[in-house]
Image: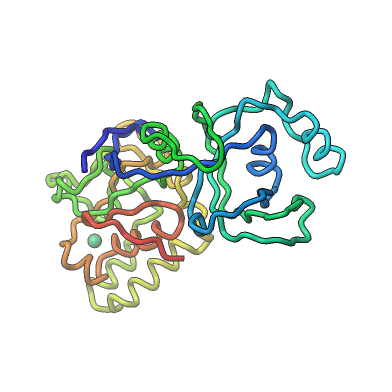
Length: 295
Ligand SMILES: [Zn+2]
């Protein structure tokens, strides 16, 4: 497999597999695509089904034709007020998963005879121009890359300060309580929302609390006001030189100084941070291993 260099939305280079990408698409007349993407329409009406598509994520492609009559109908029925012809984008506008085929439904969007039930509908931040085709068609690899790179989760690396080969291409943020400048442990700054407290750290060191208690207290503190402050775009870091607060970006690294063995055994707070981040929308690579997101 060859690797193509790709820039994700934050500008950091990410390796994305090239030729293996398979993305199928369905072309629709505009503004039916917008009714799906922004209007809550979850049924695609067709005369045919395609069982092999069940569970697959497909691209929603907006063709050149604008269906004025259809646009009027959905507006009159109070279902959705679609954008006008010149404000309705063409090309690949989003993705959806084909979750079922049904022959009846209470949905006002169901006309039959066969309804393709769509789930996990996402709009692309920037529609990708490309030609459509009849039926279900395969998106060219270069276009598929442009589509998928827009929706891939931001990546965060969580590892040891000295494991430089496991660092991401972005900035290095310390989550240590007592960083040692001589070992570069100040990094580019720190993420204070994922540091333990001085007090708990001292209690652990003096044997007043166990590692399990230290973990419980630390994670409870991080999530005391929910996890909203940890999601991509909201997780903040304080830069060391300028002293300004910035968003942690895809490709950045969080580090402490514990050994990998300790992290693997769940006895280092970076492993707890990694676990938490993987549940709130980050793609987490902890010590070089991609963590599976568990809800
Ligand atoms: Zn640690």
